[in-house]
Image (cartoon, rainbow, N blue to C red; front, side, top):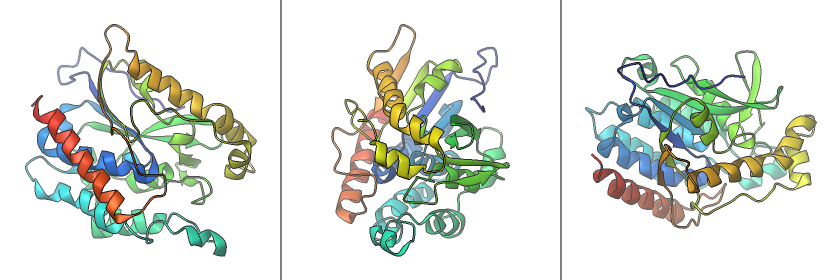
Length: 298
């Protein structure tokens, strides 16, 4: 199982700071707004490691790779959320009636992220860029993995991270393994950061802090992974427990743990919501919240 590298306090360049970004499909518009604010108020170079899940990984990829010397390009991120992801180009529920996929990964990653608003992938390999890891689910082992993004794997890795069951084909091949959305097995990997030795952690949530997962139903779990009973069982039994345990850790930190938590007070968004007004409201809330918090700590 691929894990985060351990924090090494003896290394002079390491600050011991980590950033965690939650997923949540279209709820991720909030994190997109927060990261836009952080770009100018608290750039990615402030962190040693950035770990993101699902939709959070998409926004984080822009946050990590936009150089702090430039300001306007990061607004490509909010433009993607405000304009490109609204409507039915990304999410079209009617596709399920014709055998198509509800979530169009080709449009999202191959067109938007590769061509129209290209992620500056070469920056992943540049000195000074914080290590960026994305959580994915290994569909064979039934274990979460935390894979480092590079200029060679970023697009396939984002496809894996956004391979939700049912609404996409649910899998992406990467290094001869099949992976899916990391939120199925580790939706909020705070424990992995703590295991690696990070105790100064900024957490960007897309759900309110007091929000807890309810269990997935047995039928949904089976339909998600009809040929992978191990994944279906873990989705049904473990996903909500793991998420809720992470929330308990954030709400009740132990001595020596410092969590800076940015979360919406409430949310009108759902996993597949693409209403323009709701998207803009959520993005604006993220920008305002992020600006207020990080302007105080510059």
